[in-house]
Amino acid sequence: MTTKRFIAGAVCPRCGAMDRLVSYDNEEGRFKECVACDFLEKQVAAVQVDELDTRVNQYEDDQAETEVTLVKIIEPPKP
Ligand SMILES: [Zn+2]
Image (cartoon, rainbow, N blue to C red; front, side, top):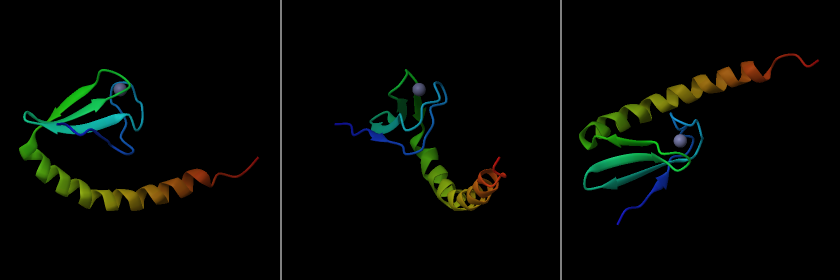
């Protein structure tokens, strides 16, 4: 049995659709698939543990920088 989960905020590298990527595991590994087009990517399970750790750490930093950037973008003077 395979459970597909949507990856929140993920953008498909092929069609650019957001929140249309699903992630699921089977005996061959973990796959990332787009439900809006035919995009399918296999992820190597062994690499994934490291990658996940790094991503969690970087995510907090990225989020802080994104907030600063967003403020700058929203701030331009009104007409
Ligand atoms: Zn797609």
